[in-house]
Structure formats: C-alpha cells, structure tokens
Image (cartoon, rainbow, N blue to C red; front, top):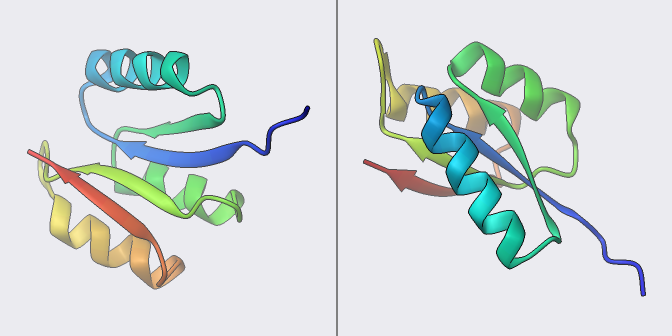
Length: 87
C-alpha cells in the first residue's frame, strides 16, 4: 500500500532542533515529510513551491524576526495554513 505523504513546513532558526524534531517525527510516522526553513524568506519560498503543504510548525522567536509577523506573511500565501507555534 502506498501512503500519501503529508508535507509540513518547520520554521526555526536552530538547525539542530529542526533536524532532530523532523527526524523523530518522521520515524514515528513516515507519512510526514518536513520542509525546513530558518527564516521568513526561506519559509515563503518553500510554501510557494510546495502546494500540498498545509501545516507549519513555527518558532515564535526567529532570531531578529518576529514569528507572528512571519505567520502573517505565510498566511498571505496560504490562508488556510494550519499552525503550531513553538516557543
């Protein structure tokens, strides 16, 4: 049986955290594919180019960027975006 993969955008400025969480969650359920971005520009680019991505895991403190402003920007690209905010 072939599974439909679910794309999830993970936005966090700490690569180690992104890698470890994506790896752990992928092991738990291989249906999930994690797109990783460290900032708004990368997140916008990935969301624009992956039309099936409907969920974002978003760090509220992205270095010099405000996570809520990043969320607003991402929702302008995909208004129905499901969001889980990390702090």
